[in-house]
Amino acid sequence: MSDKKQQIIDAATKSFSLFGYKATTMDQVAKMANVGKGTIYTFFKSKEELLDHIVSSVISEIKHEADAAMDDRLPFSENVQRALQRIFTFRQEHELTIKLLQEVRDIGTAAVREVMKRLDREMIAYIREKIEEAMAKGEIRPCDPELTAFFMFKMYIALSIEWEKDHEPLSQQTIAELFDMYLLKGLSP
Image (tube, rainbow, N blue to C red):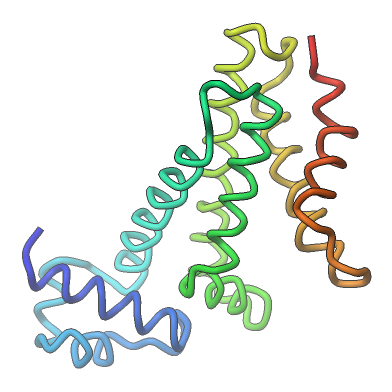
């Protein structure tokens, strides 16, 4: 990757993280990257394409983090919880995802809604792959891996984010216990 392209990506990531997608302009990105605005368009056709490229990198980072949390010596039930915890910790601590989630909530920018949906779809696909691997190993009984991944993902969101809106936050240990009790025990062979 060329230095200029990386400068543009870094500047755009910083701008999106600080100001959000809607408030970021290509002029602003060009200034922050110390390149001409036209240079940006040699690499990216639009602000949406630039955001999509950056989110693709974030998705790769999240998958890498989730993979790093897993341990082949542990059972599926522990690994899936470790991966989900890492995914959500990353999303809650990464400046860009924090700002984009805030923008979806506060403004509802269509392009941001779409990339955040893509992020969720990619995470669900990642979990689905882990479920398929666990079924192939006989660690869990056969199930619809897509539906189960969706349910696991949404259940984790509900327990770690939604619950906090009207209740005391749950500890990671409590979330793991609830996840195990309500979902994983039912999948055990």
